[in-house]
Length: 156
Figure 1 (cartoon, one colour):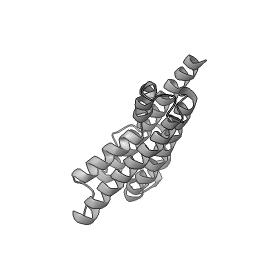
Figure 2 (spheres, rainbow, N blue to C red):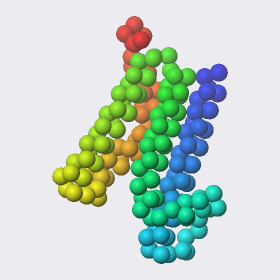
Figure 3 (spheres, rainbow, N blue to C red):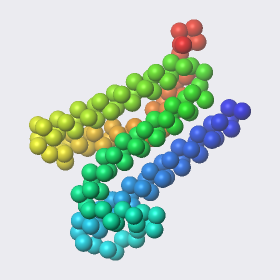
Figure 4 (tube, helix red, strand yellow):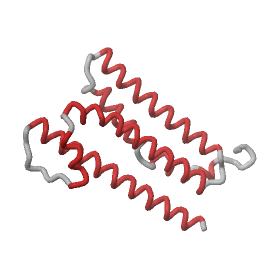
């Protein structure tokens, strides 16, 4: 039973990762076309709805889409740990990990914006990297791999 659950979550994370990448690559292609008045890049028909938006709208909507993908991956990670692990303390570690990633990412972006006056420096790169971790199964995989490190008597 546990093997089938593991296979399910591996497929789930693979599909989520593929669709996330597909979405952002094609959204970036549409933004590139709008910014440079360039129309050579092929855009899948499912993404053509985004052609009706301005570059600025698409740029700022990426923050919303990023938050949505973080939430999707958080819930997938949560469900994976809940179904694959016996140590419920790992769910707390998952929540704390996401809070730390999001907080550090927000602090880095706020620092870049208010101190440097723009969102294109090293702070932005750090924030994107941290949020990239939140949009992946990395934390989940580390927590699942570490499950045997916690004595059953102390974990609850």
